[in-house]
Image (cartoon, rainbow, N blue to C red; front, side, top):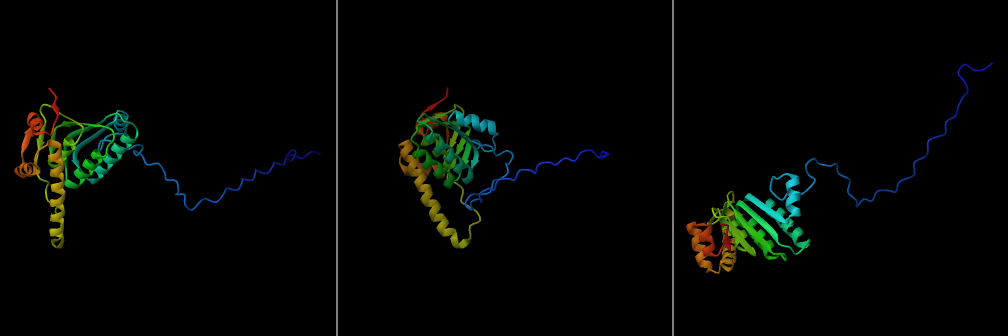
Length: 218
């Protein structure tokens, strides 16, 4: 009499997984992807697609108040473009202001570039940010743009015991910036210093006559 359950079948045992080599303690754990961090942005707050397009066109763009983080990001971008070829790099400066530290960091990066840098001023450049235009290999300003030579603001929140040291360091950095501006404009450093103290404001044509700009856009 046959069994109501039917014939018994025996399945093959599942394959035994191959042993994996132990993970090296020097290799970091894989990190989960973070939305929105697929590429480095060339414009602070700019969308990723714009960053990629600018990079492809050898453009670095700065706008607004440039702090240490934005300056370091721009330095990395300049270095990347410099290492990738000898074609000119376009530096777009749109309404930029910067403190002494970020400005000098960028000036040093521009001075070390092997590829030529063509800077374009759009909007008003204020304080130490003026040097970012002045030290470029080619310097263009729009007809209605302004350059404001002014001293940077003093840092706030410094303990009283450190005020003297901080003031001395700021004075040293400011003089270094003025000397670099003087070299770029072919003017005496003392004249640059006096104009920064006075807050000299220059339109595009005046900036060209001053030596900060090569030509203005008609």
